[in-house]
Amino acid sequence: MDARDSRTDDRRCRGGSPATSGMIRRRPSTLIGRIGRILAGVAVAGSAAAGATAGGAGPQSTAAAAPVPAPRMVAAGPSVLAAARSAPSTQLAAPTIYTPGHLALRLSRVAGGFSRTLFVTNAHDRTNRLFVVEQGGRIKVIKAGVVLARPFLDIHTLVSCCGERGLLGLAFHPAYATNGKLYVNYTNVNGNTVVAEYRRNSTNPDRANSTGRVLLRVIQPYANHNGGMLAFGPDGYLYIGTGDGGSAGDPGNRAQNVGSVLGKILRIDVNHRTGTLQYGIPSANPFVGRTGDDRIWSYGLRNPWRFSFDRTTGDLWIGDVGQNRYEEIDRSTRASGGGRGRNFGWRVMEGRACYSPPTGCNTSGKTMPLAVYSHTYGCSVTGGYVYRGAEFPAMAGAYIFGDYCSGRIWAVVAGGASTQTPRLLLDSGHSISSFGESEGHSLLMTDLASGEIFKLKGAYR
Image (cartoon, rainbow, N blue to C red):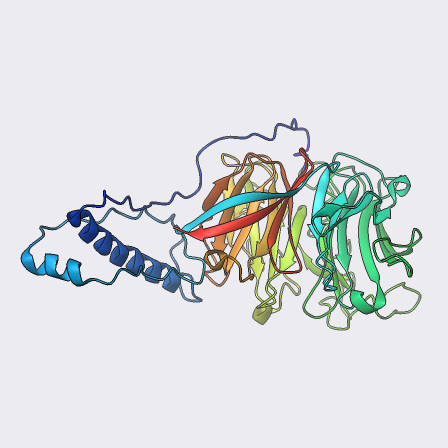
């Protein structure tokens, strides 16, 4: 989420979609129509197989997928009619993995009544509770479908809100079920970033203790671009997203400065301490022992509004908010280091285009985005997740993300090529502030304006 610097808070940007999808239309249920349906099923199966191949690790076209053409009808000769009479009534099985152009997405309301809903997640403690972050400084619990009246954590007196400030991030320790530790990222009353550790109440598991331990503070020169995402990686370390410090155009060039923690993803060890620090510095962090801040993991980011790790592959996915022209999705596979030492380009680059300087910029050593979209289609990307649940096979292997301004939701193939065109799934009309995951791996979405939580449901079409 990004206030777009001096832009007004008009969340209903409109325009076409980066990619459209075709869908075969079936004819009436006559005998000839039945033959057409058989042929159409073959056509769909063929296109799905081709899509699954394109979604692999090999090369993939970066152009938008063309609409699937309707099947060409043929004359019904005696042999064809005989085949139709003897054809089995079972339908062809739907793919068990995301196939671009064949996913129909819808939203199902989970709960509402929240104030400025900013994030939703789970504690992976086998309670199946959902924890909802309100920007003003409260975390609430959805338990067995009911929103508990008393907040899990209330630190609103410590938090400055709103705009791009507030309680911005929440992550539960991988061993939360046994140690009860959780971590929050907020802007304090002076507008500076604080990452703090809290603990579950020993007598009431639906409450956290009201006092915490501050791990780190980051001075913020401006009110915007505070980042705020927290997530534990597959290595057990805590990753922290920071914006470039704000204003517009990164006037201090902080994102490219490896001596600054702004415009970065940081990585710390919450289980140990290094020297006088309240946390440890992992020895494999890229700037340990060389010029640069030891806490930096990745740099060259403008305002990473939500990042996540693919729970199957460990790949790092980032939604980085653009300046005036482009929003971007970045992927760094675990095999290639999972973002270690990666320079994602800002402020030299905005998306795949030069920003500063506006032409002739040096792209050497910079990781280009996997996907970009222009401000014709939105104005503030909200990074999402790779769906790895079992409930909706048509969504499996799709990285699903959205735009806060336009409410559009797109997908790319998680295991696909390094350059892809997003496929529009749904024009939701919501102010998409975040995506999240339930303990059962359902994909969830928060609406900042309406204070609602939604579940994403997908079906093969």
